[in-house]
Length: 167
Image (cartoon, rainbow, N blue to C red):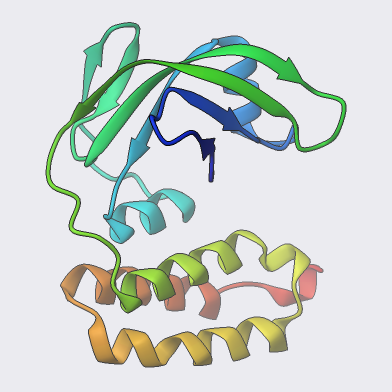
């Protein structure tokens, strides 16, 4: 989820779709942890329904992912649910750093874009998705490390096994 955040990181606007699990979770509990990570393999594994070995620690009413780069403990202050993409205004309670953020190279961006496509396969045309994967192959070949190559392979395998006839 791409939040809208002020420069001081004190006020946050989260915009989950009402049909999402994130929306349901935030409505149940007004406190949450927003994690920042540069681990594309973790993101792909979670999107594909894998069972990564995640470690958490309890901190101030929320669970913190130990492998995250940073975390932000937020409290939802106000909701606007008048449209399918709701808006939750939140304030920062606390924050922490777990490890350095190494950033996003072209391969990580390509893996993230392909992961987003995979979450929308049921909405997209097969030819379009295959063309996008072909386009994203170049930055993978040029800049991917082991983690990005593993994540890319997971996405490729998922795409190869997807049943397009169900659309």
